[in-house]
Amino acid sequence: MIYDFDEIIPRQNTASVKYDLLQKYFGKDNLLPMWVADMDFRTPDFIVNAVKERASHEIYGYSFRTEKYNEALIGWFARRHGWKIDKEWVSFSPGVVPALNLIVMEFTEPGDEIIVQPPVYFPFFSAVKNHNRKLVLNQLAYEKGRYSIDFKDLESKINSNTRMLILCNPHNPVGRAWKVEELEQLANICVKNNILLLSDEIHCDLVFPPTKHIITASLSEEIANNTITAVAPSKTFNLAGLSTSAIICPNPELKRRYDKILDNVHVGSGNIFGSVAAQTAYTHGDEWLDQLLDYVRENYRYAYDFLESFLPEIKPAPLEATYLLWLDFSKAGFGSNEELKDFIIEKAGLALNEGVSFGAGGEGFMRMNLACPRKVLIRALNQLRKAFEERKNTDK
Image (cartoon, rainbow, N blue to C red; front, top):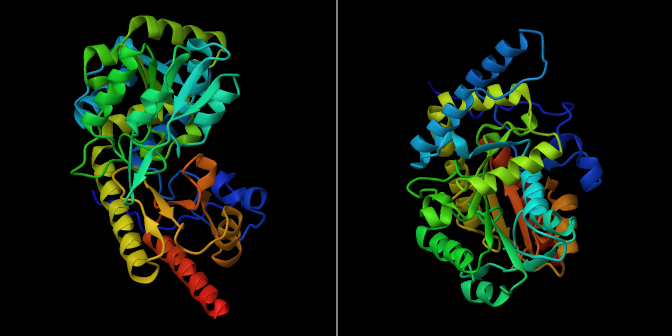
C-alpha cells in the first residue's frame, strides 16, 4: 500500500498544542507551526480502525495490557532493532517524561548529582531540578557542524555523589544516532562508576538507513543490568495524545523498584485506546514506517539543499535520526538569542523551538520539525528566505 504523506490536514481547533497554543507561547496565532515534536501526518488507517473498533464496544472501564500487547512490542523490537526483550522486563508508563521523573524519584535522593548532555530535550532538566537533585552538564562537543560526546569532560564531572546519567539516544535536538563505540564507552563509564544509565530511546524507530539505531541495553549483559530504557510508539506513529509508553528493565531489581513507584502513584493502568493503538502499531506498522522514513528523509534533503542554495549562513546539523532539524544561526548576524527569536516570529512568521531552551550549547540555534507535508516545509523555507532578503535590503 502507498501512504499519502502529502495530504494537508487542518489541525486548528482540535486542542492541538502545536496549533492552538501559538498565541500563548509565541504571542501570535498566525504563525506556521514547526515546533512541537508531533507529526502533521494522518495516523495510519490500521491504527485508527483498531481504535474505532474498540470504541464501538461502548464500555470503557478499567483495563489491563494483554499478552498480545507484550508480544507485539517484543516482536517489533526483535524485527526492527534485533533486540530480544523478555516479557518480564516490560513495564508501563503514561509517557517517557513521566517515567523520567518517576525514575529520578525512585533511584536517587535529594542532593544527588545527575548528568545530562546538552543541548538536549528540556524536560531532562526539570526531571532533575524539580526533585531537588543537582543537575550536572556534560555538554556535547560541537566541531565542524557535528556533535559528539565529550568523554574527557564527562569523566571529570563524575564524583562520589553522581548517581545517574540520562542519555538521549537518538539525540533530540541534534539528530545524532550514537554509534556502538560511543555507547559502549559511555555505558561502561557508568558501570565502572556505579552510575545508573537511563536511556530515553523514544526516537529509536526514526533512524534513517543505512544508519542503524543501537539499543544501549543490547550491548552487553553487564550494561543491560545497569540500564533502564524508555521507549514508546508515540513519536513513531504520532500517538502522543494516547499516553502509552514502555519501560524496559532487564535487571529484575530495577524493574521491581520501578513498578513499586508506578504503583505508588497509581498511574500504571494506562489508557485503553493507547494500548490498542500501540499493539496495532507494533504489529502492522513496518511498511508505513518505512515509507514515512523515506518521506522525512526527502524533506531533510530538500531543506538542506534549499539552505545551502539560498541561505548558506544557516547551517543544518546532519540528520541521522528524528524528524527534527537543528539549525545553526550563529553566523547569520544576530546579536542575541532574543533578536533571533523575534526575527523568526515577527519577520519569518514561523513558530520554531528556541535553541536556548535545550540548554548549554543551544545559543544561536533553532529547532524545526520536518514531519509535515512537503508543501508546508517549502512554505516555511520560503518565508525564511523572504525574511532574510528583506533584512538584507533594510541593512543596505
